[in-house]
Length: 294
Ligand code: ATP
Ligand code: ZN
Image (cartoon, rainbow, N blue to C red; front, side):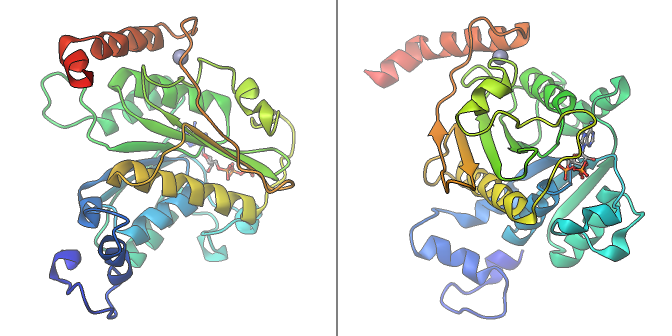
């Protein structure tokens, strides 16, 4: 592709030159690996659409995008979508724009509600490797949750526990002045059900979740910042540079970015999470792992 053809010394009109400079400056070892990465962005609203655009401009190999909603005029206080997109599904409008921005990225769009019985199965199978005899191998490197409700997050949590898929969750508070991202590795970190999310977020914000019947506030600033935090963490995770915090919060009123570790709970209500924790413990206590630590 374009990256391979590019001369490392010249900053020309090639959109990848500045990205490859990250490698020359020693930040990232092998930036071109981004071309082999597949990312699923679930929810292409205020945060997800911007995250998808950032990944597209970074030259990710393949993007899977999911949403059931249409673009409305009410979305224009956000970034990414434009008035001419009104009436289109968010997935169609996003795919069209992203493809124009970077034709090298393979984009698969899924117009679906992931929380229905059918939607759950369709979502799960879209993440599966084709022709895999076990039927449980994920083909994506990372799932980014950019949805705005509890049910959808629970669905992503369940699918990722089933596929042993690492994912990142994001959220913006109802009052639009705070947000967070969280890394979820089945068995290794807390799952979305291990710790009630309100408790997790209580350090900065007790209202991360959208309440029914409440008209939430929204700011393109906070959503853009959370999308940036999310994709920065995704790049660090996928290309192995820097630290990926298990939890990173953003409190805009206090200019405060708290980080924390969230350990899995032995008492998690989700039995599959408890199973993944046991498997992780067995891995950590295996002769190979013990030898490696000695
Ligand atoms: P508003 O605040 O006006 O409700 P919104 O619904 O666009 O705006 P955002 O926080 O901007 O909310 O984005 C969340 C996105 O996640 C939306 O585009 C929404 O359609 C999508 N989403 C939420 N639940 C699901 C689901 N179960 N399946 C697919 N997409 C979902
Ligand atoms: Zn759990």
